[in-house]
Length: 472
Image (cartoon, rainbow, N blue to C red; front, top):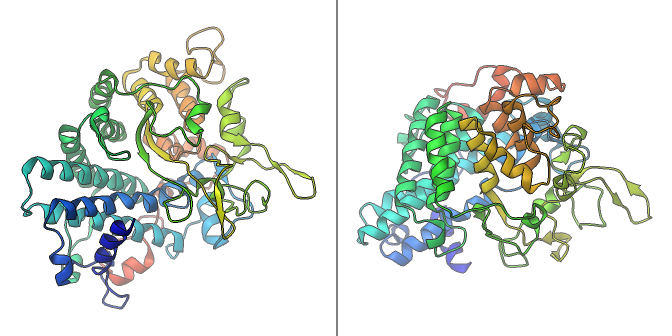
């Protein structure tokens, strides 16, 4: 951790002080001589790559841009919540303003994380390291960059496309690129990563990207671009690699010590406890008034009745994912639904906060199977997921075809309950053009223009040439 802190500190030398001349990314190139002398050896680049991976702790934090998409969907709600309540409620209510501090935070976090990636890619091009090592570092960084830009283009649409460190003057010339151009970079990054990265069985360090991770993400990108043929091909390669499989029990996915399993494709690593990277999903998603199961509750992403009722009778995934309430100190049961996938009852408590040990799966094999069903129209992939849950297969007499009469609706239902509260639902509805009809029917004040976030007003104040999204 001290080494990671060292490289992060070096990276922080590149962040400009806030001021009226600050560029829209709030970043400038590393110019400090110590930093310039740093990117020389394999050890230097190992540290820099680890620091880039450490940005996952920010980009996929429980109160990050991807986490907030649950509020934009029909999966999650808020009651009493810590923090700036109005700005958090705005996501659930589709009443976002350009001044929303959370949206600006997300913008900063994503671009600062991209800087950590781009600086490694920039410096390694001229470094005196062997080509095989150089390719591996570039492939890992391009996987991360593809992942982050994929999230960002789905959140904001057209965005400034930055692929190298920029001076303050240079940054003012970088305006929003069309989403098609962003997707082109994402596809190129992930194709490179898929070609150069090793199979999961050959990855030497937990948490590093593999060939299967790049292929899985690329398949999701292709689906988002309506290219089902390309998606089916790349996702089938993931299946054919024999690197992954469903665990026999859904509940076992969420056992604290069950990390980097056969089902996991890309997983963010936590150790838990003081002095280590610890997971905060459980406490952030616990009710704020809950001081029995956790010392601190953030109140984020409380479960809607609509999601709870989506589960079929006898589906074991519901009880493995959602609690219906808790008993307070005086013995009163408080009926409130909240996520329990990342519960860690053995977590060390420091300063009233539980330092949990749960990893977070960004990509897992069940997602691959459900995307393959979507890409191919073949229900057998869907039914593998249902068989694990002990439920009747689609197309059989026991399947609830009255509620989900088509394969598309069956996949939509299955993705919702299988991947519940794992930051997929809103992106899924957008990808399949179902966001407007589904969310409008459930009372969300959503419009086509509101299916992207506003560009933060402070960004446009810093550079008025950056256009605002329609509807804001």
